[in-house]
Amino acid sequence: MHTFLVGREVPDVEDAALFINAFKAIQTCVHNQWLSAGHDRSDGGLIVALVEMAFAGNVGLHVNIPSSSSKVQTLREQLGVLFSEELGYVVQVPKAHQASVVALFASLHVPLVHLGHVTDVDQTLVIQVNGRTVVEDTTARLRDTWEATSFELEKRQRSPDHVQQEQDGLKHRSIPPWQLTYEPTPPKALSTRNQHRIAVLREEGSNGDREMGSSFYLAGFEVWDITMRDLVAGTVALDERFRGVAFVGGFSFADVLGSAKGWAGVVKYHPNVLAQFKAFRARTDTFSLGVCNGCQFMSLLGWVNPPVSEQLALENPTRAGDWNPRFIDNACEKYVCNFVTVQIQESNAVMLKGMAGSSLGVWVAHGEGRAYFADPRLLQDVLDNKLAPVRYVNDANEITEAYPFSPNGSPHGIAGLVSDDGRHFCLMPHPERTSLKFQWPYKTKAIQEAKVSPWLQLFQNAKSFCEESTTN
Image (cartoon, rainbow, N blue to C red):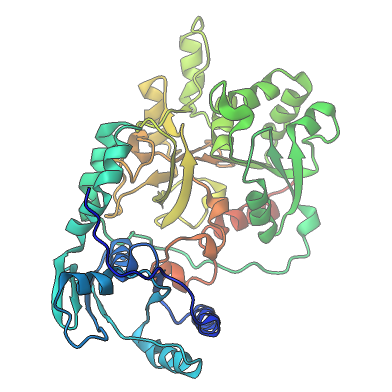
């Protein structure tokens, strides 16, 4: 085994005051929104920070790194410049803010060096040291090399075919096609909060209840945090006090019986709770939202069945089980947590009113999200009646079943279902985890310019439904 040592000094902090000033400078830039991107120089040094930024932004770079040595000739010297892990930052600054950033760093006596610029057109990555080219290749090819080992490990953990799909498609990825057909509106002070209550319902193993409650609170609801144990014990009832109910995500009872099956069993095998659920759904002034585990829960209860399911039940009286749509194991054979793109379709879903035609980023986090229909007529009825109002799309804004754009392989890219009256809506993605702009890991110009996160509209639509509909 051969060891190649470059230098004999480990990274350290020699000037605490400089470190503090550098931190203050970066924080000021972030607060003033003067930066487009940033990366620390640590593991792997400057060259790794640069290429990782290019990989993430899917762009090229043209960089010339100045060195204290007038000529960097030897391999050892080049490696020292490129891979030194001394503390530092790499920041991307828009032209409009360059003067402000330079002045700020100068005022704090923090060294700032101009390295180069981003190239959006050809995605070529050129890195020089004192004008001498040391790296020249395309971002896509270098990223494929960078990701190769991870993909090989991934093929041992999930469907190799799906991993290969993602690996092959990586070089063709482009900016997400997020677009808005409406103008998101900020929350406003309301005097009707106590008039419209929503029950945020959870079970053992649920999560996301805080985000769900916060999203509905921002939309103007009085939010009640309720557990299934509360309903079983009679501490509280799902009665006329509530206009809405939200079933949160998570892994109820650790999903050991299958996703949400234990949760659904609590309803089906407690007569009093079942009666409350039936009465709530039968009212014409109520709505419900199920997310992730809550989506699976609603489908098991039959709250989003297409109309043809009743006909199928009559035609097959001896068939064991029901005709409810279900959400089953992801086609990739593993749990997936990604930020994906969905497109809002035309439908009568009250919570998506005015949002059709928009494409939005959203978090997914599930292992069983593939829509399943026991009979082809169920799927056709869903499509014919526009009961699948949210679909996964690719970077070309086309509905897709391909991985990783569709995390689960649902037919026709189905990400959620809605009842035929539009009041009961479930989806596998998590709008409640994207209802604030800071929860978006990346923002296109349309999202950046929006006053609030576009997903807040979904919760505001629920409030509008309550204000516009008459009480039974």
